[in-house]
Image (cartoon, rainbow over all chains, first blue to last red; front, side, top):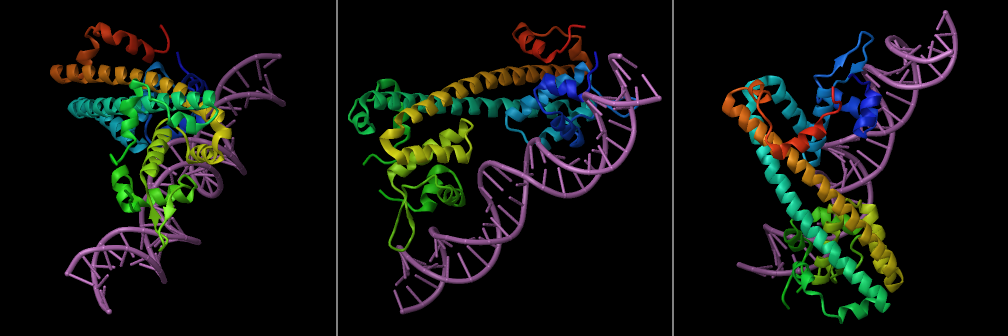
Length: 147
Length: 147
DNA sequence: TTGAAACTTAAAGTTCACTTGAATGATCGC
DNA sequence: GCGATCATTCAAGTGAACTTTAAGTTTCAA
C-alpha cells in the first residue's frame, strides 16, 4: 500500500505541512517520489514517522532526530551508536515518568484542596483541616524551610 | 526566611532571568519588593513557583498559567473554576502518562532490537529473529496494513 | 566608604518548530 | 480534455518562551 502526504498526515494526526517540513529537515530520506515529483509513502515510512513521534515525545529536538536518521543511513556501522541513543532515551523517559508521577500527585492534592474549599466555601477553611495522609509527602515537597 | 531572585533561581534550578520573566508576565504578583526595589521571595513564593513548574509540566502555556494566577487573585470566588482547572489537568496528565508509557515500551523494544543487532553484527539478522512476546503488542502498533 | 557582586528595567535578540503564501504542477473523476 | 483537488517548492511569517544587552542601582563585606 502507498499513501500521499495528505493521507499520511491523516494517519499520523499531523498537518501535511509538518510532514513536508520533516522531509525538508532530512528526517524522511527514504520517502520516494512519483514520476510527477510527489512523495510516495510506504508502510516503512509510517513506521519511521512513528519512531520520530516517539523520539520527539521523549524530548529529542528535530536536530537530534536528524542525527539519528543519519545513523540509520550509515547502516550497520552505527548499530552500537543507535543502541546507546535508545538506552539514553530509556533513562530519560524513566526520569520523565517519575517526575510526571510526582506532578500527578501534586495535582491530585490540589484537587482535594479545592474540593474541600468548595464544600467549605473558602480557602481559609481548608488550611485549618488535616491533610489526608496520602498527600503529606507531596505537600512537604512544596515547603522550603521548617520554620 | 526570605530570598533574592538569585537564591530562588538556585532553589528552583532555573535562570534568574526566567523568574524575572515570569514576574513580568504576571505569574508572581505576590512577590514583594525591598526598599531598594529588589524582589523579596518568601516560602509561599517558592510554593507558587513549584505550582507554576507543575502546571508547565502538565502542558499549560504561560498565558494559561497567568489565567490561573488571576483566579487566585480573585480569591474564594474562583474556587470552583480552579477546581475545574486541576481536574482537567489530572485528566491530561493521566493521558500523557499512558502515552509516555507506550513510548517507553517502544524504546524498550528498540533497545532489544539494537542489542540483538549488535550481537548478530547486522540489522538484517534481527529481522529473521522471533520478536519476544512482550514486544509484539507495541510492534503491531507500528504496522499500518496487514498486507 | 568604597568596590565588587548582585540586583533593577526595557528593549531587542534568539531558538525552535512549525505555518502560511504564492506561484506552479500533477492526478483523478467525469 | 477539463476542472477540482491535491500536490510541489521556496521564502517569509508566526508564536512561544525565554535570553541577552545595556545602562544604571542596591547591597554588603572589608
